[in-house]
Amino acid sequence: MASEAVKKILEAEAISDKKNAEARRQRDDIISSASGSSSLAIQKKIAEATSEAVKIREGYNEKLKEYEKNAESECTKKIGSIKQLAEKNMDSAVNEIISRFF
Image (tube, rainbow, N blue to C red; front, top):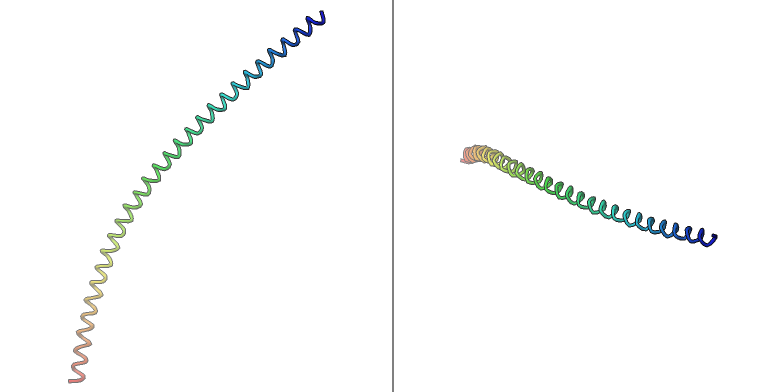
């Protein structure tokens, strides 16, 4: 009778160990699957963010080109105005020098 009880206890422990091992395996599988899914989701978000950053960068590059074009045009106009003013001043200075010495 005692050996029958011991036998049942040992069987119960074996079943318990087996169920615990199965539960650990399932837990590890779930964690591994979730980890893989998380990694995939993170990689997807990184790819989306990178793509968005490229689009934004391209937009800023276009705006920069337009700004540079406008700035160059404006500088060219101002340089032209300054050259005209300098030529007028030079003509006046040359005429003044000629009139003083001759």
